Length: 347
Image (cartoon, rainbow, N blue to C red; front, side, top):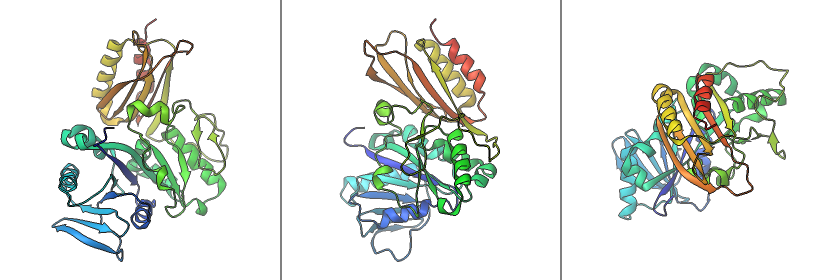
């Protein structure tokens, strides 16, 4: 991230999950941050604010805690460019952006904006996706609504709401299901949006070069769960749940590990091919790779059909080199992808 780029957090979650409650807390709390909040519905009534700009289908207001609340009905790229222009000429002042998506939205198109629009990418950096999951109705929603599974699959952090309305057994079942869908996102219980703002900002979920620094074990199969005072949960696939039944969710995750180096050319060709075929169903994929001929880790990640890579930390002389990759997507041909990746390894 350059000093001039503005970090952006995408806040998503299905209808009724509690994301608006969280957003309202951010808009009313005196947290000291200058935040531009982009939402698709008008903000809460009764909040003390001064109207700065009002146009048809759009309004920008300054809240009493310094937040800027921008309600839009139009194109996200356009409003981001307009906000940047207003910031540059001193009309408004903010240091970061939070975008609340609609409850029925797949976060994919929103995240792609920061990679496909060069002007947006110049001024903004996608920091992470925060998904709020309804503890009471989340299981049923995941079963009935593909968008809810997409929201979980895209998440860099999962916030579990309304856990006071469910039993410990129900919570364990839901936690296990969330981990199966997305084993890389830490999960935390929240009560009426009460979570430290530092835990949802500056998480660098989309920052390639800092993946290892932020979460060294993000592909190890360990997973922080939502219980206070506990560390890591069991690895996905190894947690025994005898009291529930398995859900065959369309969106699932799998991890690929290798102890041989990749051929850079073969891997690039293979990943490009599968992205062309399955890209729309590949929600998030990332990895830390041992590539033949390189003394440094290669860190990569992708969203749908967009991929990027960068050089990570150097391998040390006494370090065992290996590759670890995770794929999160909808009905992906796991064995086909695994077989193709194995063919890209140098024997």
